[in-house]
Length: 102
Image 1 (tube, one colour):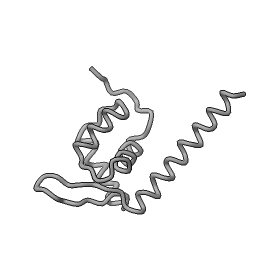
Image 2 (cartoon, one colour):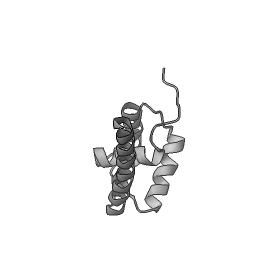
Image 3 (tube, one colour):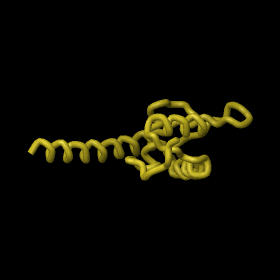
Image 4 (cartoon, one colour):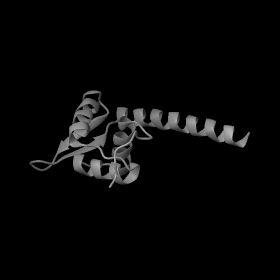
């Protein structure tokens, strides 16, 4: 049984990266992918308000296809934002690598 611990990445990063990687996806699938890919359990009560917040910021677009399922994808602004987040992660990893090689 997994217990939630402090995640290595922010919830913002995990959600946006999952949508970026899996393209058109939906809430339940995002939750499952985060659980598998990041070993972190994100409840619907955490996930859905963040999705709404990211939609308001213009990072995510919603496409309703079925009565209860809404597909999510990154907008051009969302792609720019995730690229900024990737850049920060790479800078941190490079710093760690340089320190380890000293």
